[in-house]
Image (cartoon, rainbow, N blue to C red; front, side, top):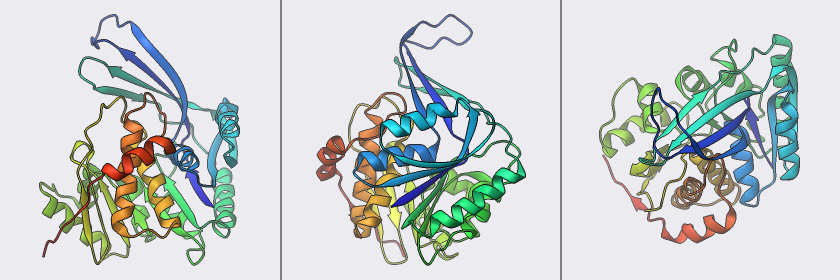
Amino acid sequence: MITTVTMNPCIDKSITVSEFKYGRLNRVLSSRTDIGGKGINVATAYKKLGGDVLCTGINYKNDGDFITDKLNEMNILHDFVIVSGKLRENLKIVDQSNGYITEINETGYLSSEKSIKELKEKVHILSKRSSLMVFSGSVPKGIESDIYKELINECDQHTCKIILDAEGMLLLEGLKAKPYLIKPNKFELENALGSELNSLKELVSGARKLLNSGIQIICVSLGKDGAIILNKDHVYYAPPLPVEVKSTVGAGDSMIAALCLAIEQKQPLNQMLRMAVAAATATIQLEGTQMCNKQNFDALLPYVKITELSFN
C-alpha cells in the first residue's frame, strides 16, 4: 500500500468560458466541482490505475465531509487529522478560445501546533506499513517551510520509500531529508538550483547536482516539451503525445501516481517514464480536476516514445 499526505486539501471548481474577457461579463458554458489537493489527486489516480492507497494529512471540520464522502465513493482509505476551519476553494477558468487556464487559489486555514504534532505521529505510524509515502503540494498559511523535511524525518525509510513533489522553500527544505524520488517541473528545478536551464543538457546537468545530494531518482516534467527521468546510471527523455488538452490540472499528480505504480511493480527507469507520461497525457484529455483512468492509460502507454540521453 502507498500513503499520500495532503496538507492543503481543497474544492476545485472548474468553469469554461468561450473567451475570457478581463473586467467584463463572462458567461459560463460548463462547470464541474471536484475534490483537490495534490496528495488527494495522486491517491485518486493511483486507485484508478489499480493500486491500493490511503490518504492522510489535514482536513477541516467545516466542509471536510466533501473530501471524505468522495474518497468513500472511490473506496479510497483515509485517516486525516481534523482541524478547525473551512475547506479552501480554488477556481479554474478555462478559456476555450486559446486553451489558457486561469487559477485563483485560496491559501488555506491555519493549523495549530497540536494538529501538526498529531500529523507527525500519524505519519510515523503509517510509514511502518506503507511501501511508499508521497508528500506533495502546498501547505496552509502559518506552517513552516521545513514541514516536509520534518514529516519525512518521521518516516521509517528502511520500510518505505519517500516521494516529494513540492516547490520553493518546501522543496529546498524537503531535499535535506533525502527523499527517494522528486518530481519538479522545469520552473521548480530552476528555482531549486538558482539558475535558468535552457536545454536538455542543462536540465540533466542541474538535476545531477541534486542526485549528488542523496536523491536517487528525479523526474522532471517539461509540460508541452515532454519529460525526463534520471538516476545515477541513466537519463531518459519522452516527448509529449499529440492530444487535445482540456485541462492540465492534476497532470503532475497523475505522473506521481504512475511512478508509484512503476516502483511497486519494480519497473526499470525507462518504463517508469513511459508510465508517467501516459498517465499525465490521459489526465490532460479530461476536464476539471479529473485523474487518468486505467483504460485510457493502457491505450496511450504503447505510444510513448523513450530515448536514452547521453551527456558527459
